[in-house]
Length: 256
Ligand code: ADP
Image 1 (cartoon, rainbow, N blue to C red):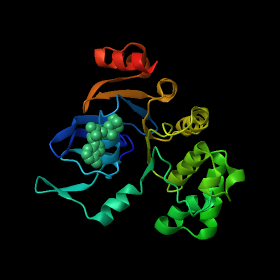
Image 2: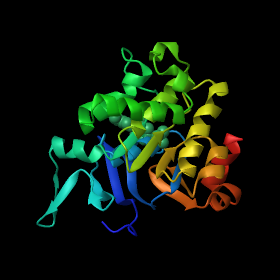
Image 3: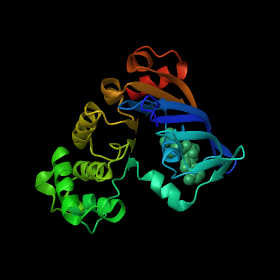
């Protein structure tokens, strides 16, 4: 696919759980190397939208392309057909995800958590995976913790291992779903710092967060969602500094 194409394009994405419509036509475009922060009150559909991008949720209408490829479906005869689980798993490999709860394998060391994916899925040799994993653990500031189990690590350290684990798959896109909201306040900074470095290195990221200061410092675009729609989008200066919509203003006032 041509490099000029946006890495992520979502068009009119709709999703309902039963009769409750939680995404009412979401559009999004993320250029390569960009950081987009999704902000909005709880229940506005941010997590669901993120999960649609890597097909942890199916959606009911609209289209999402990552790197020019339609996600989750293929178009035949003007209609969408769901891809097989195998093809969806292959698409998901290009998309790293970091969850609110770190979801590390508890019976594996930090190093083993990071090497698991490359060995099992990418078919990398154990030796190579270990070298890559050690470099990644160093990148997230945890080279001295490679042999520790998750229970021996703080929440902030576990989340940094989770970031290293996602990066080990060499994803084209990183999704972060409120990566700091389960952390004690004093541990938030170390995780945000790692994310800032990734952004500075040109990693394409979509970040659901309540950290307004992070969005202001790091985001190329801020998207404010409420009630399953995008209420407002723009640069951090526009959306956070001079919001046009009442709903955005009310939300930002509450966050202060
Ligand atoms: P946000 O991330 O903005 O807090 P969510 O995407 O988590 O919002 O949730 C949007 C709405 O969808 C909420 O009303 C939530 O209760 C509902 N929801 C999310 N996941 C499910 C699910 N698996 N089944 C039913 N309802 C869900």
